[in-house]
Length: 130
Image 1 (cartoon, rainbow, N blue to C red):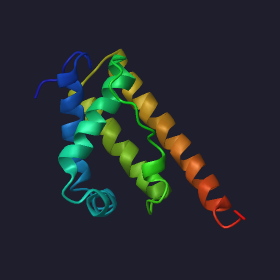
Image 2 (cartoon, rainbow, N blue to C red):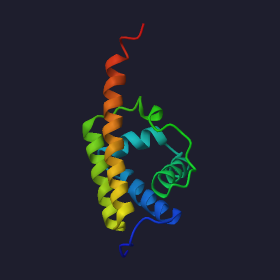
Image 3 (cartoon, one colour):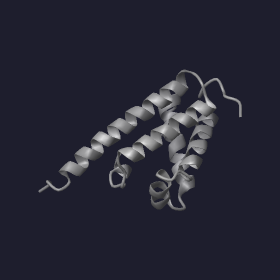
């Protein structure tokens, strides 16, 4: 597939999400976590991800959830975030080039940083709640 100029439409978002999560489902580090959690609900997860990235990148506000809570109990650590980011950045670079593609990678990196900080805090305080 030829690289497009940038991520400019919902179809582009769907292409990114579908390509990325196809790779996630086969990844040796990520697939056990994702497949165990999502099971047979991949279509619903993908729809949510279309909406999330459509809101973030296209500023078309279709996502109204809170991304962190569903991830708070996942058995993930730095190696999972590194693999996720590497795969995400690789997928963006394979499919797109331009400002929105750069923004997608920047936002994914910021989300990974934020999630890791929140997970560390959540895990560090989970035994201290009285």
